Length: 183
Image (cartoon, rainbow, N blue to C red; front, side):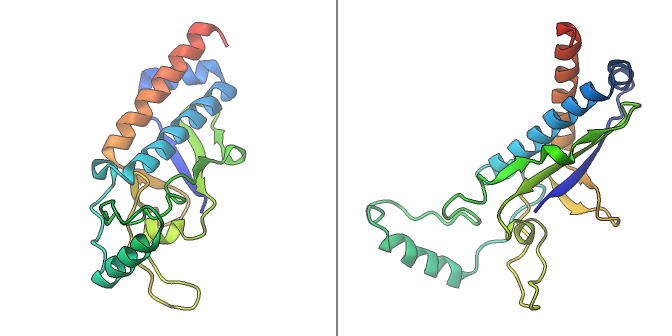
């Protein structure tokens, strides 16, 4: 599930510094920004405040089946069952990464392109909802990455305000560190 994220910087001082520093520095900032987005996505599985919207509750039959599965596992009988949507084995939660081969930056320092991806084929269904190849309804969207929808062109997303602030913070910090170190 690679999702290409177009990051547009609307900070004049940072844009000037990026333009001056060059494309390689801008690409580094794109990677740093994408890592921030992937990290927020991982944390959103356990921290609802990082999600773009509230997740739909689990259906009762899903909870019942999960409880049976949980109870059958050795060592779980004494533990309390927690109904956490999307967290069973933790595979999806820990599968988010930055696809470095899809990262680029414009020469003017205004736009970055980065891809946050998962090797789990069901990741997109959980992020966006939808139907399977066979038209079978899928679970409702439970977005974990800090954006809710793809743009109509399918190539960019609108980050949440919280994610925009976090990305701008790490981008500024990254540029300042690179310029300070003279790289």
